[in-house]
Amino acid sequence: MNQIDVTEFIRPNGRKEIRTLTVDDETFQKYNELIQLNFRVTVERIDSVVSLCIENHYADFKSKLIKYNPNIETNICNFIKEFNKEEAEKFIKLYEN
Image (tube, rainbow, N blue to C red):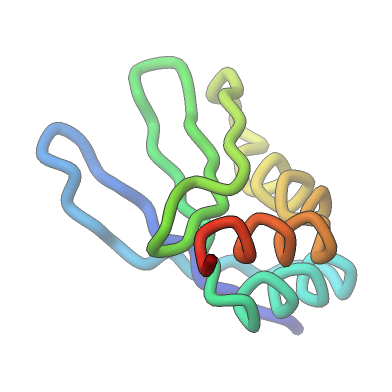
């Protein structure tokens, strides 16, 4: 079993909680790639919408808004699977120069 940590911002004041998810091998591999590049995955529910984000201390690298549904963990995993290491490395270079 693979487990990952996702930062969840809880409304109304944005309190942070770490949420641990059990994921498949592909999601776990992509998650490790993004962690190695100092990114994190964040989730915030805003009424019926959920904001998913891959970010680092510079900025948001990738974000997506989805309608809240009971399969939110699957949506989070699918979002992580979209992570592209090469694009992320280019993004980092923009801020390092």
